[in-house]
Length: 543
Picture 1 (cartoon, helix red, strand yellow):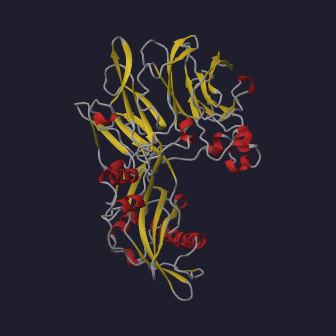
Picture 2 (cartoon, one colour):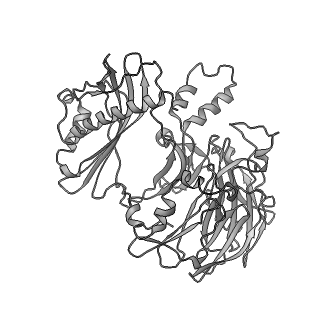
Picture 3 (tube, rainbow, N blue to C red):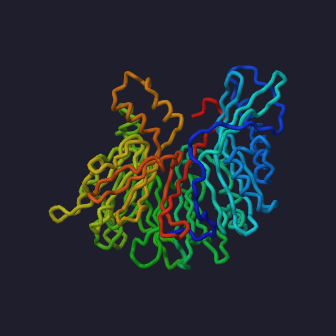
């Protein structure tokens, strides 16, 4: 179910310019005086200071673009001129610019930067207009420490949008205005709580905590359940009619204090309301929704591991009862000193477990009986159920860190439900740093396609692509290194049931922690949302 909190979405994306680098243009803009860097290898702090100064200069450049006052030296630059002309009919009060320098390289006499620019405005036709672009720039400093821009390159990877609706808008302050808990608890960073809660409760800097969406109170609006580390209560926020949120009363019993790494709203007892499952160190807690008033604990599923990473549910055996899959990235074997870790084929992860539901809050562990024990020793970060072969039963794809992913086909053999691992057979093993998985028929040919989120590294792609990269490596190992830096993969399903890599168009999703298909603009085509992290900083050696 989709969260119904109001957000204004991006309506259309148009590719404006190619990614080919072109000759830049001199810029006759202002000059800024900064302290000269004396050493050939400046410190991180010096690089950050320099990046901040360059950002301020580029903001002035961006402001001239949106105001139509393009520097004379740019008048012959078609790409920058076109961008500037698009803003001529915009409201001056609505213009907004943002510039971020995310790469800075110190050469002998110059400074090379790569920057990201965002510009937005409201046009006279009342449409919103905005762009995001990336470009290079070259700077120099004289003996007095004076900083001057020598060249600003053409805009690259430019995305334009003109629409009656704005892109995305941060609604946090408005949504939480009536709920003091958000400011008192969730708005504070982890460092704040690490200094105030004893580690014995389970709070740690290396934790994973999730959230779940579901209609707890049966009013037709999705509510939000937020998981927390040990020592902090979980929070259930109820979605109000005015599109604000309020925390549910304590009598609901939702505010568990145990470390909770995952949560899932599902109707376990088939009574039409949303029950709740929680992953805790004690096991998987089963909570019944009691007439939209409170949660009643119905039991705990004991697992072989304690560090659950994700929960998912489906009726894999088609008996009318939901079944639960628990994935574990780390497990008991991960701490084994005798364990041999391999980045391309790690086999020291946790053991995922499948619990078959029998109704009346009864479950039995059937991992081995169902065939899911094959390859069940990897670092599993995400799992998704989908009937990829359209035979009427749900199949299972698991994204694993440090190695191959797995597709378990759901079959009937000798009257029993058994899974067969066939990822390599049909071309979707995608050996890398799997962190998310999402299914959709993106090309509308009637066949489900697959998107896998992975690690992306621009520097890694450049280094592993060198002809002299680790020459003593075996070809297969070098291939794995290159795959690790490649990024995300969109697999297109062919009519014969095999999958092919659709190409580089969707690889650059950065470090893709999560991803999901959704038709954002209701045009009948599945769009793709990728949540990522680890933004490159202004260090010359930053990867």
